[in-house]
Amino acid sequence: MAKEKKSRKIKHKLLNKYRLVILNEDTFEERFTFKLNRLNVFVFSIIFTLLLILTTTIIIAFTPLREYIPGYSSVTLKKNAAQLAYKADSLQQVIKINELYFSSIKKVLKGDVSMVSFNKDSVIDAAKLDTSEFDFNPSKEDSLLREKVQLEDKYNPLVNNELNFVLFPPVKGTISERFNGKEKHYALDIVTAKNAPVKATADGTVIFSEWTAQTGNVIILEHSNNLISVYKHNSLLTKEQGDLVKAGEVIATAGNTGELTTGPHLHFELWSDGYPIDPTNFIDFE
Image (cartoon, rainbow, N blue to C red):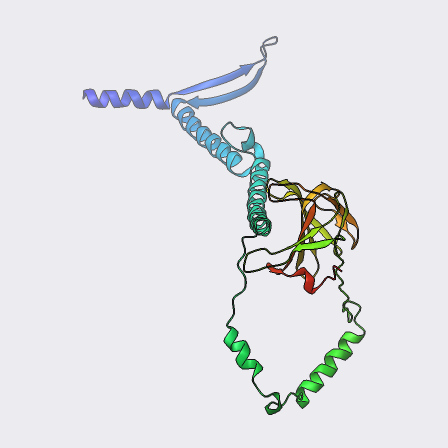
């Protein structure tokens, strides 16, 4: 019986009706009237709370207003971070390429390059072959293909049918030490007067123009056809890295700088596709 009385009492409290009246304070005129009970107020409060939580969640998840909430990063900040990440990755690739390029330049400066080895017997055997046994006349298909390519390239302005590449002597003087691959002397030592003008052997770009302890003032030019020329022991450098030079243009003055020198001279090197070559095969120093 006590439990029934208690449940009736609770039910009465929940369902007991109340009137909420809103009056004008000056005239006591009744403006709004609401009939309520505790159960209605409780249900309305729960629904209003759920709607408020749902609305707040939608605003935070799908609108830019979440940027103003502490702990959330902005869309602009994320975009900038992604762009910086892409730039950092591209810069790392550029740095790797530059490191490989500078390592090859260091090899050129130090002369740490091995000569190309080949089998001499194969060359001798090839020289003994009788060329009369071979037919070097082009086939009909080959002749037609060559004629077609020549006609296509004849009026193509991008094709240079005549390639003239002349190398000029960098200085005037006497060769004191010649190119010697066995002793790893991949250069010509040309004795000349102190402060004599050192000229570019061909058109090119300055890729190195610095001081080194062993070879003094060094300048390196990159030319077409994968050719690199090196000028060491200069007293003064007149060009900087990145400058474009013409054949015969003064790029330095001869001197006696560096540890590995015994007098005013020019240490001149030529490199083709990463291999040293004898400059006297291409330049007339007399």
